[in-house]
Image 1: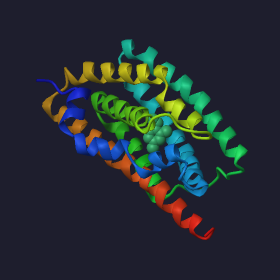
Image 2: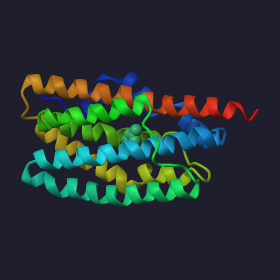
Image 3: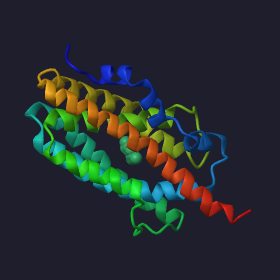
Image 4: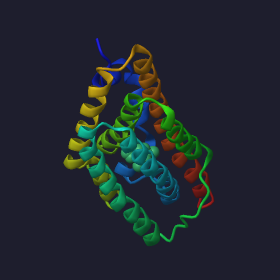
Length: 215
Ligand code: HMH
């Protein structure tokens, strides 16, 4: 049977739970997250999204004709998202010219490495990256201000539909992929899951130590 996005989620439930649940997210929901923790995430995720935008550009370059429309919509949303990150950072007076932390750097290097992977692997990784945020930001339930706006960006029904379209496109290519490519796609999915868990932990841990001085 061909690999599919649904099968990947079913085969690796523990890895996916680690990718999409974290005290960072429940801390947003409960209001217990320290601003320093959130601000670390905001700046590092801006750096992530710039690298991710370039990755989506490369996926578009490798995509078959009938996948272009969905990917162009994704890039259009990312154009808005990059400006939105800049506005959110400005509201908080956060410097965006900050170096990436090692975890962010590793994630960006992984996305760059996908350039030489088969399209089915790239499409699977793209779906996994978007699905992680779509599910992760929704799981804790409705969030209070100022986090509701962030949760809604990745949890809104339109974004959920986009993630479904990405899954359909990944599934279509996985269905005709060689066994070796399917194995590579599964490894990419697991790498995304690990990097997602590490990214939450990075923000949670570094912001927490910065906040310790406040008592
Ligand atoms: C770490 N993963 C991370 N940041 C994001 N903005 C996304 C995924 C988007 O889905």
